[in-house]
Length: 305
Image (cartoon, rainbow, N blue to C red; front, side, top):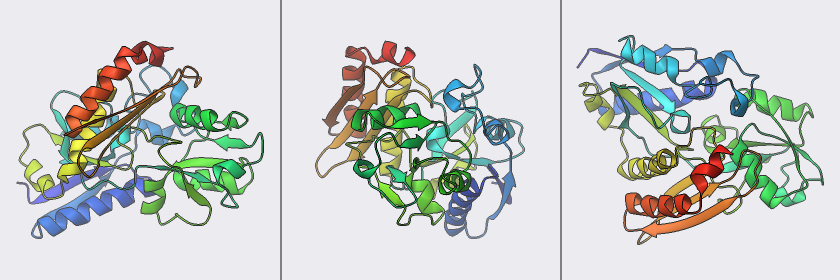
């Protein structure tokens, strides 16, 4: 293994916090290893205005990971740390996305308002900022009177726009807020029964070249249950031919005796929503059962509409 392990990260504050957390775990597992963080700017960082759901063909696919993956292939870095939900299920040849899946953080979403309002307390017709078709569809199902507008930028930028009064509420991943120390009275966690998480939400992915010996270093920060859940969730996304920004939610979690898998799919405008839940004795079997139901109910074609 190389004497210096070069770990690639996006330059946003959240990405750096996530990467530094992973790096700290690597140093704990391999105290003699020197680890250096390399900052890499992605297409998603350069364009913070275009709604991801309407990005030009090809641009929205892997918009936050492509440059990191190319840096791995070019030998400029040894490992890359991603937010798992940003990583497409189709990985470039020669790369291994699941070299390690650290313990997952809370996968749920938060409704954030200046006064800390619950969803049911929002004023009729309140404007909610989100660029996620999934979040929009599920919130419409819960509150058909709400209005929506696109909201992009890093976490701090989104919160600043909210505080400036441009939105009545915003929806952000709880894991990101937690990692930045921003879970406060403004944030109300949304139950999965109302807003089901995106596949991979709350999890990190440590990526490397396939077969590279540095994968041994990543092994030290891998969490078996988190890996099982994430692999299962991604199998459903891949099975439906969906992408990172499809109007699709998939969540897999271990219960006391069985694994449970939840899914939601809808058209891009949030119509014709289908929801289902299945269980199994492993994450894989629960996900397989869920995929079978979703496919049988026409979700593949629904997601293209």
